[in-house]
Image (cartoon, rainbow, N blue to C red):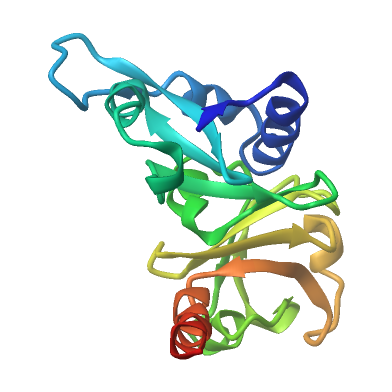
Length: 193
């Protein structure tokens, strides 16, 4: 486990900025009340086995007592670096993104299941959408009861959405909470082998 270098930090912050905008400051400066210290610490980003973790400073200090090969995870895994060096957000960062999202989309109850089965968001499934979304912006998807369901990339702007037919794709799927169940089956198969 180590701090991110400059290139890695830039990649992580660019991806987070795509979803949070200026609210990225809230993520970086979030005080941590974990540990025995009376003064609140800070959260930081750490890299371990190509995965990036969002973790409190006090937990990092306590984790130094664990050998690297035996350390499985620490804090919240927000994403991972591919072999090509690209950074991809994982579904575990959804709560962090939802609390600080710049652009949001709310789905009608009839289209929630379709999204949770890894399908893109269609115009006919939109309940509400925030203003000033441009194509390529990061979007957090919510149910109509404000439950975060996942995130994706806007395919159309807010203005274009008003003119589209109901079967047009509005948001490209990236991750959803249904992945926990889909990945559970894959992990069971790996364990059996």
